Length: 392
Ligand SMILES: Cc1cc2nc3c(=O)[nH]c(=O)nc-3n(C[C@H](O)[C@H](O)[C@H](O)COP(=O)(O)OP(=O)(O)OC[C@H]3O[C@@H](n4cnc5c(N)ncnc54)[C@H](O)[C@@H]3O)c2cc1C
Image 1: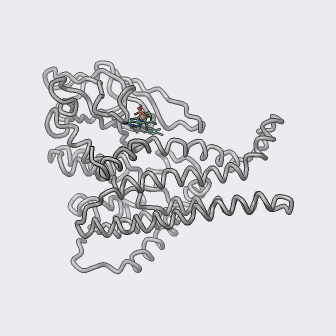
Image 2: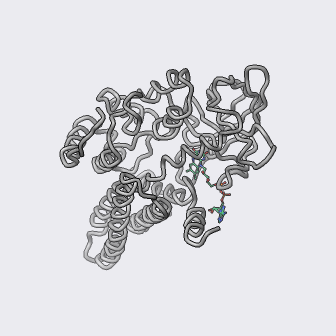
Image 3: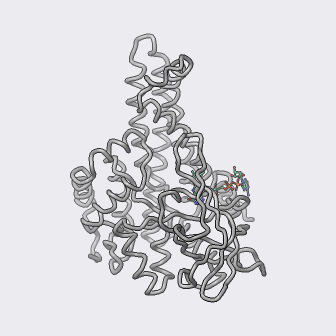
């Protein structure tokens, strides 16, 4: 229900915590706590539980199934979920495409796509990046040519997270080479079961399969799957990314990672002869904790700014830049704690005895390398900050 007076945030926090602790399946929480990589099965299970409780889409308007929570409540919800080791909601449908459909979709598109996103039945992935079009996304070349009542799409997408388990891909394609490159881009919704689509896994250094190449060979996409106007896709794509600008304000996952790493250091290096190494690692964690506290303050201030209609300025870029680096550094401390022991096992080809949590610390360290690349690389964030500070 939409609110007119300021909500009781403490009571709300308690309500969310009670729900998370009671309703999030323990095996999913255990996997999150152990740095496990989640797939559609776990995310979809959790989304269905949230949806059944009426909490399926915290950020959507009430008329489309949202709860009418204000920004601080949405932030508390995300924070408590992380504190309770519940998975973040799968973002591609709910946080990315859903708001675009609500803002720019036709009534038919809303009726067709929003319910499946809300209930967790339909799974989406994002087909933006291409070889040669990542940070410079507007250089994308995958081409769509209108042929009767369908676009014929040819090209290649890459780094497409979860394409292997998704039903649909929202994508940006080139429909014109005239004018500025941002002006010839269109957003299409493509069923991944369409003839002409090939999905190939990209194996990353963490050993997990989460990104893919998606090849499109004369794929026919009905015109009714186009969002908004032809050649206006850049506007919708940017709207989608800007909605996520405060994603970095939720520092709770980083605090959880820090807590887990501190427990690891204490248990891993408990022998008296390891005391110096243990204390050095704990000292590093203290420094990181201080930085996280600063980032949390910045995140809270940013929420206040948005709720009071004040401009955000540099904050979202600073948060993305800072929290990506902090998550990497926390994972480095964990690797320094377990690395030596694991390396000696690998040297003895004794990998069968390396327990799964051990391996997951290493995988997590590897995975964290991607943080400073996806969602706007650190170098690109620095450019944004420099432009705001000094002008372009
Ligand atoms: C784990 C993971 C998941 C991803 N998931 C998706 C997804 O689901 N869908 C999707 O569409 N994409 C996805 N991506 C792609 C991601 O958005 C791109 O990797 C990112 O935009 C960077 O593009 P690039 O890889 O082409 O690198 P490039 O843009 O070529 O950058 C290479 C290097 O150059 C630097 N650089 C680039 N431009 C500048 C500049 N102007 N000034 C200074 N330095 C610069 C970059 O910071 C980087 O270090 C994912 C990537 C990863 C790693």
